Image (cartoon, rainbow, N blue to C red):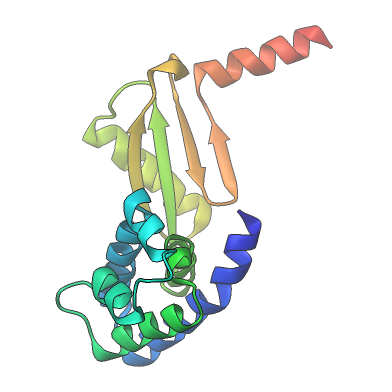
Length: 175
């Protein structure tokens, strides 16, 4: 996994630089997300590693319908370097760079039960206060947490779940 990220990093930085220069972060995000989803499909991944697939066919397969000329050239560059299979990692790294540039923290809130709109707004407000910038929150439900929630915001993980508290209590009692 770390090798894939290492290989993908310069391409993500290049895509970010192009998007920044063009002032088109969102279209590049959409195009990269589309290409990454297609490239991540196991059938497409197997096809991309087939040496009989032409570069043009590979690029056409991974291109969104309405794509810019620069994005097409970017995909051609990836095809020439045999890096099309790194598109999921490139897309993820690009999104991290974009979030940093736009001063946005992306967080995932995993709770034991679905959160109400009011609860979600309180969490967003607390995260905005803690990080001092805008926060984009996605949610997930994991009943195994028993109660509470786990907030994952990049390098920061806040485990307020009942499962986590019981695990910490068990560790403390064992020592």
